[in-house]
Image (cartoon, rainbow, N blue to C red):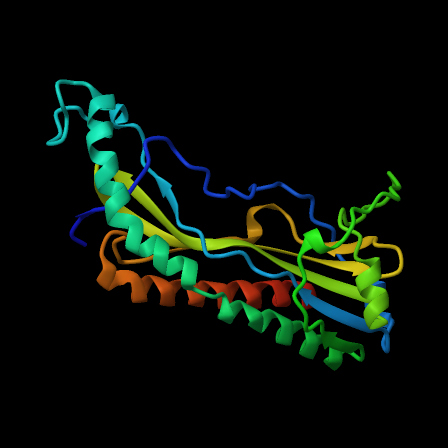
Length: 253
């Protein structure tokens, strides 16, 4: 792929601005499957806008004899190339803000259908749900794990015994630069999910670690407007794969 000038930043940006947290996963107790007939609500937290992340290592890490090198002063080169990167990437950033995460909504149907096949009364919680809508949970027990957000009120509203809460933490393109050139890019998706006892707010199952931080390379340029449809399609494909992975792992024997 021919390199093109693209937007970047002078300092490295964390690939997981929301926090690549090493949350401890909690395996599901096999006895859970013996509770057929229980009512389980599947909650997809309202996704954030797609986010374009960037990484432009300081030019001093590269050979200063390269075409853009200026009198062996990498900081001066960065001052010159940064506006070029910013201008080139703006169309992609604007397009990503308009992109929805439609393919990830498949996760609701996968969980509901899977639970019904196993004898549970499962349903989708069809309302906008954000953590900020609910109070923090304050009834801690050091011997057990509880959700920090108090979802008991939501469970009571829907008469649910349990809630499966799915969180699309972040998603969007990742662009890497060398000088003012986008040498490669990828799309990334970070998801989390947990099963909560709606009466106690206790976590009975939770994903964790980097297993659910998905990334897929894309043969495109962050600075080429003609590549935006390709990037968008690749991102939707990865969102669908992430939804399937969550469901597959929850129902795995």
